Amino acid sequence: MILETINIKVDYKKAGLNADGCNPTLTSYCTSKSDEIGEKKFPALIICPGGGYDYVSDRENEPVALRFAGNGIASFVLKYSCVNKKFPTAALELASAVKYVRDNCEKYQVDKDKIFVLGFSAGGHLAASLSNFYDKDVLTKPLDAEPDDIKPNGCLLCYPVLTSDKEFTHETSILNLLGDDKSNEEALKMRELMSLENRVSKATPPTFLWHTADDSAVPVENSLFYMKSLSKYKIPFEAHIYEWGNHGLSLCNYQTSTGDYQIVPVNEKWVQLAIDWINRL
Image (cartoon, rainbow, N blue to C red):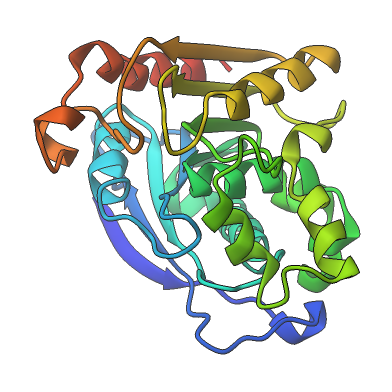
């Protein structure tokens, strides 16, 4: 296995952002080359753990990468910058990570046209942000990149934060993206910009979503609103809404649980469904 951690480089000043405390890394979990097996080209998955843009969850980190890597998907975990790091700080880091994997596809045996992003909770907001802003100047200019350099070929969203509508959003995630001043005109415009169901367009990549109907932290409306927009623009998507389950289930099993309430065998099926979806694309 190619297990290594790479420092992701972003010129934050070019984007007018504060670089203090920013130290994004990308950790690879990829199959090593083998003379016996021969050359392969695997799909790649860049995982964005959740944490309310306040921290990067361990529960949605390495265990998830190993699960997908064990099923023939080159996996990477992005530890992105959090806590009052205004948009597009983390989005630039994810975009740079996608470009890094695409630029190094031979090393990691990755198909450059099958690079996916997966996000949990606030990490879902991050993955969906890249999916809808990859062709916008806010990401391409600071990275001196073309849209095709940073475009994800598909997006997987797990109980994601997607709307900034105060009735249905996860307020901590949105406030962490807005920075210190949460009431001036610029902040209000930024808040509307962060409502990603309104950012979907014909350029949004195919999407896989799952959520629980009784999620009390990030209401299921986040996924429902987004699905409606995907349908409006005829973006291919697959969605699974499970009847019940607490927020932050990760793999829904003992490995990633902090208590029995996070072990939900029925919901655990999302992993195999996601693997099948990736392989179909």
